[in-house]
Amino acid sequence: MLQDPEHWIWDSWIADDGERYHLYFLKAPAALKDPTLRHEAAFIGHASSTDLTHWDLHEDALTPAEYGGWDDLALWTGSVARAEDGTWRLYYTALNTTRGHGLRDQRIGFAESHDLHTWTRVGGPILSPDPRWYRTHDEVTGASETWRDPFVFGADGRWHMLITARDPVAPRLKDGILGHATSDDMVTWELQPPLTTPAGFGQLEVAQVRHVGDQWLLVFTCHPEEQSEDQRLAFGDYCTWMVAADSPLGPFDIARAKPFTTDPKLFAAPLVQTRDGQWVFVGFRNTEPEGVLNFHIIDPLPLHG
Image (cartoon, rainbow, N blue to C red; front, top):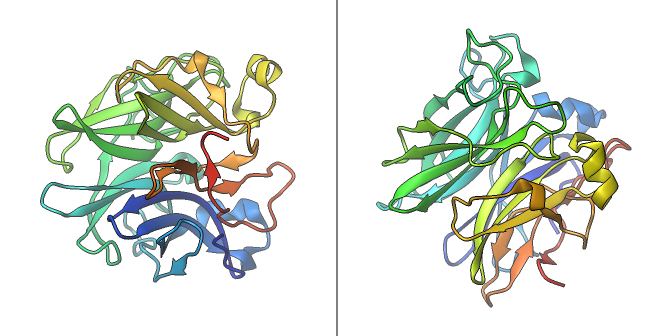
């Protein structure tokens, strides 16, 4: 378990260097008292482990930029991928203070590292939602209602990015879709149409794709309050969802997603393969709207009981 009495810890993602698992996670000062304030005070912490249970805390990976930067207010969830030349790239979501849209102004950029400890900002924002495919709340500036959680992976000789996004016309709580972008160099990205169509979810948060056994598995998170009434009546209140496909790019039929029932409150949990080949979730338990008084990363939970 990973906890810090002085900070709330929530969404996380993992980079595996072959020897240690490097956990990157959102954190904010517990001195804020009110957990709802954490979203505009978030930055990216760092810990590492050899067993996904006992963690060594390190210096923070990335904090907000100086005033005026595109990412000067708060940093949100992302992913880490390694280039062919060994460079690690951390893709992340950010808010800034200057455009006046608050939590709605979500933009994506990246930083680079050669050791997974020291990160240097390189680019951002690198993608804006195209209103032909994705919902925006300000089509002039490109600021988006939902545009976050970049997950980057290689497939078919290219790099792909999954993005939490919304359909421009689908009804609320059924408008969550998976945005998609491609790149040949991990630096310049070209936006593509979404990989999914709307179903019973208002958001597909912290999406990830993993090759588990003989199939590809898309895992995503969605607050029960962000799910349609039909979805909740059919399954109950679950946070972590999965749907299988034949390739890392789907097609993913979100209407056929099934919940991870072992822990209904498991949220924003990386699916990670252990050294012995087992697949486990490492995440935190969301208890909103009741309120979370103690954020921490729990011990691994097996994908299959």
